[in-house]
Image 1: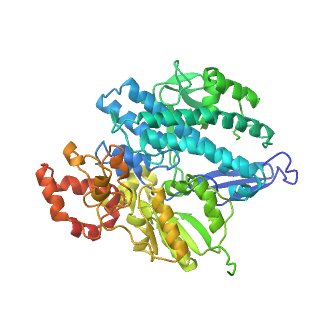
Image 2: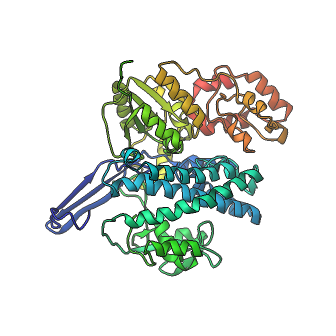
Image 3: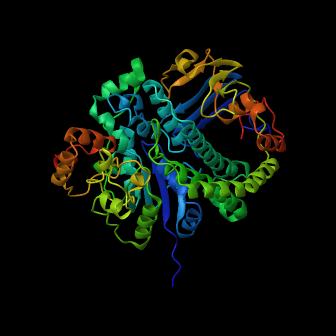
Length: 309
Length: 254
């Protein structure tokens, strides 16, 4: 809801979005404000329950990553790597620096892929007042072509590094079943260099878009590390306080609610945000020069209380 | 030639990770070309349009709730062509693993004292509930195969699935046999069509495409014996994607 929606009476609001679209997973949003009082505010994850925790019982540790990867097709590499890291921790296995670097590269290309999909295919239609990317194919073809070119680059990253992004093949406990080829890596490198101009163009395009005014400060939870802008490894950090990943259960409180198949997770009894915005807010100083200047290009600066885009 | 209206296509997802649909977004320019040939009227993962009038339904995910059963039957009524898309829809995929333990136990393990509020039934592939016209296998589906099946649908021809084992493609790709590396590989009994995707990347076959119609189970047993492996281990490994197939597969493998 935007400020400009002046017809909405803030004292009485009824929102009932059945089946959220342009998102992975099934969810409803229900908000009910009666005479200025919030009667109901629910994000109902109506996904059919899949029982992953139960599926894993009795399976080989070598199969665990294949199972957890299937939690989500969009962020399969993230789920795979989390599972591998947990298994290595349990077995006392330390991967080589080379393996860790390849894992980070895989994670970054997946992140790129996911963000390109997010910005151009899932979010852009809202900002341009259409229902999906399909009408944009006709009205904004050069931009769509550019987005697909960028996506091709990040997709290729998945292909050359792990066989594919959706349920990666070659990353296993301790290392890789097969190293990426030199030619593949060189091609990826040149595609990435070529992609820079598309990235810079993306920053320019985003600056021209008008985002709804909405601010919601919350607790920002992300990994942090002294070494880098953390994504693969580090400490769980929220409100400047750091915890070890192994203390997950001490930091997060998970509970089951009647209206949702997904568990509700809180830190110190309060909700929190994860993802790109939290990383940005917690690790802004560690962005590299290019990233930092892109951040400045959009006028964004940490801390950012805006959950959009 | 008379101008015909384009066939209307709708995508639906049931219990799964939605990676299958994402393969369409990953087709790049091919996806744009596809929009010249068909009208995509519903595709919740990337579209807000929700057209209820469609010719071709491309459906991913397994049937795992009572609501899923009702919904897939309605889709079947409306669609002229129904395509089962990906491992969950064609063979049950990883969802089938929950069929191994009592449902009440699975509910309790995940939802604790709220287990009673959870609706769930045995995980099933689509064709356990409705008639399926075309099958696109694999987890995730292999883009060249998606395109081959779509071409067949648009030309109104059947798409016969390869009825030989992954080993055939794997040999053509000159991979070293996984058994030579002391691994248990599902390639000898799994239906080809993925161009031995996982083995090309140094891993083994996990059987995500299901069994060939007549698996050479005696030959497969000889391989196991030669490499000192146990049948139970292989059968257990095969359940990663194929547990929903139950007796239909058990007889063929034992």
